[in-house]
Image 1: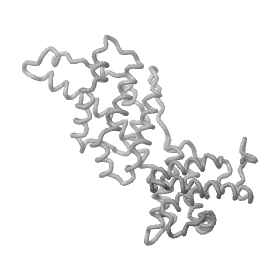
Image 2 (image 1 turned 180 degrees about the vertical axis):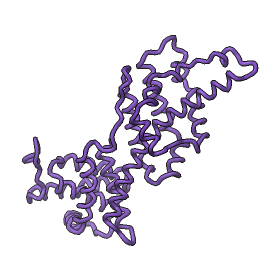
Image 3 (image 1 turned 180 degrees about the horizontal axis):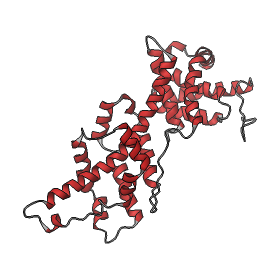
Image 4 (image 1 turned 120 degrees about the vertical axis):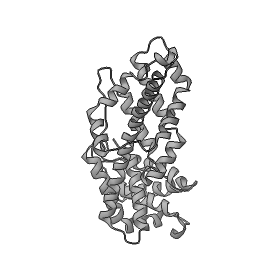
Length: 314
């Protein structure tokens, strides 16, 4: 499922686009927000599909070698351990994965060079050779080699990253998140054939959280900017980086409007986000303002937490 950190990042990206638009539309932006999450979920399936396509390419290569007039002994009787890997078979036969891939019609058919390059890099790596040459391979080894293919070959591919950037603006920052989901799916595979295919959202609460966080960040924009001005000592508001303002707007909105989320979680999440999405010194600047803002808002009873272990949070 899409993590809440990524949901916060998506909210930040769409909020930024909303305020820079000539004709901002709340409903249109909310649809874009949901579409952005769908694209991440689609990428999760694309990564799993790459594992299957690389396996298919390997099988095709074996078939071509066998069909030679005078194949070598190795070509006539190739090592098919990777082709019969039970983890790959489980991925291929999972009805949820098959349904999504078939319904969305996702495919790498237009990128044969990517499949070829990933395959060649994979089979020339010591990890692959050790796996293929091992006298026997247990289920753990089968799982490890698929995990290696995903995390060390596919996700690290510069060509893949280039293709993703060209294909969708929504995929620029999503590879690590979607890759982690795919890796967890591979890691969940059991010898029984069971596997964990993640839903798009953990539950309806996460979908609601995404939409409410965006809408309330827009609705509370004016008063939250006033709060930022109040605590931005010795700083002219106009000199604060726009991205820093948006990050703090959303953080303050979440702290005030979502009583079940600990303030510490909100604080830490947006400080981490600022390290990747704003200027080099932004995290320290945002840290200082949010720290003062949250302490003051709690003292004024404007931040109130409810739920187990949160009442009276300090």
